[in-house]
Image (cartoon, rainbow, N blue to C red; front, side, top):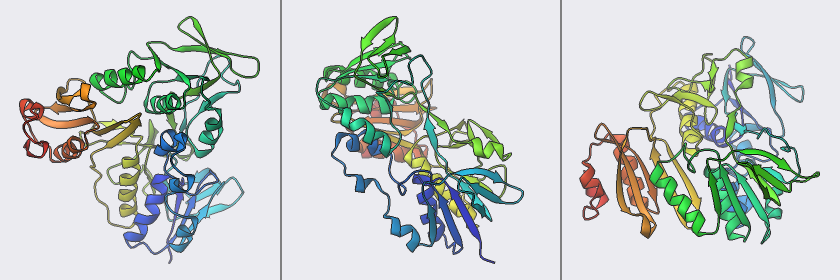
Length: 402
């Protein structure tokens, strides 16, 4: 009997799963359900080159639409899944259609975390998660306008950098004591904060937003007991996993959909991949990763398991961010208590911070230093032990540190 695999979510993980299922030899029917109007596309360029206007929309798409039909995948766009019946093995869609499945992949991703404070509904307050979000925001970027960015994470700082290049007056509010605090070490935070200030961006840390003022449209941001005039606002305070449909179906969820090393959920016929999953990392700690790497690699492992060729997921996580002329590349996950080793000179805008844990390389944060990032990623995968002094010594080529 022909098998049918249904994929809910038409993003990076969903698209990768289709390709991997075919490469693993699955010949049955595949249906992929996506709630946007577009075929699967890359999200990272949205807050960088696409917002800047230097990256054409056509380049965002992972494959042309006909490629999915060519590989035997039915692609349902502008369609959302409403409920899953694990006992009957069916998915009910918002258009009334019911899909029967043999195996189901949940690649539902995340959604923006809305800000909850007075005035949050005013016109001129933007979020950035989709092509449509950028298309609404981009026309507002005009020289001299005052942009208030709420949240000093990757998205907030990437948008701030683009806006500064466009000549806007940019202010970033970060509730924590330093920017990108959840993602990078203090030396990296300090460096990027300095780079933004040098480019004319005002950064206010340790300050939460109390509300927005305006009559119909936002005209000011209230933060730290002060009022700041605003022409537009970009909110980037994180995302929430789209795990509700799984939880309602009785599938185990915590901070996302819980999966094992084979991307299998608590239901043996249901798998999950990408930003929505709550899974064990290489060091055994449970986590949810919002990254292209995790979406791609976990989708590959889910596809392999669905095709009857399971293999344990144990990949090194990696991330990147482009701000001004600075490329930040990160491999591994930093932890409190890591021994930090600086290699290179931040003053030259080219350096790396290595993190040693038990003498082994556990993470690397590289700024305009691709070799350090690439070798660091390899060292993490190998669990290589390196002396801190050797890592810091620029007279030793990075490829020869071990």
